[in-house]
Image 1 (cartoon, rainbow, N blue to C red):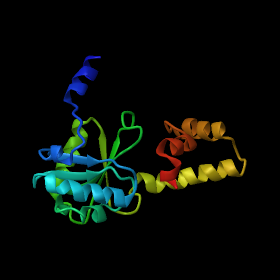
Image 2 (cartoon, helix red, strand yellow):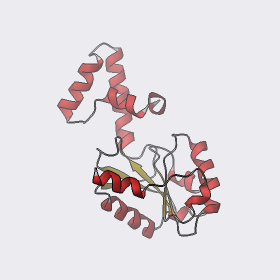
Image 3 (spheres, rainbow, N blue to C red):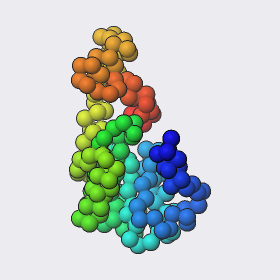
Image 4 (spheres, rainbow, N blue to C red):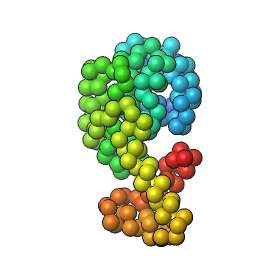
Length: 181
């Protein structure tokens, strides 16, 4: 209860981008649509100080392309938290073509301060986790479609057989079938 109260005291909400002007780090976590993310960065940048680091929690969109819509591609990175964030320990750090070393080091420190583990990925479609995960989810759908197993059996087999915290069909539903597609 005390930790919750302390955390809630540090959270402030706003509907105005200008209120983010003094932030040192911004993590965009909008829906997985490039045009939506680009518009957010274009509208946000004029309100930020020049030293603010920008990141995207995208799971697959090119970091280099997103960074190109800002005035600071050297201070822009992918900062991909895994779902469910409170449970999963991994954060993928994805450099864009122009990301500088101080930005990478600063974000690596943030990951450590959060008590999570960083994995560095290059700016290729879907990075590491989703490049491997999405074909697995796709195969789980085919396994269901072909009648090899039902939803419960497929998810149980992967949770217990490969030590995944969620089965692939449960995870697809959690991520959102529209996003997986």
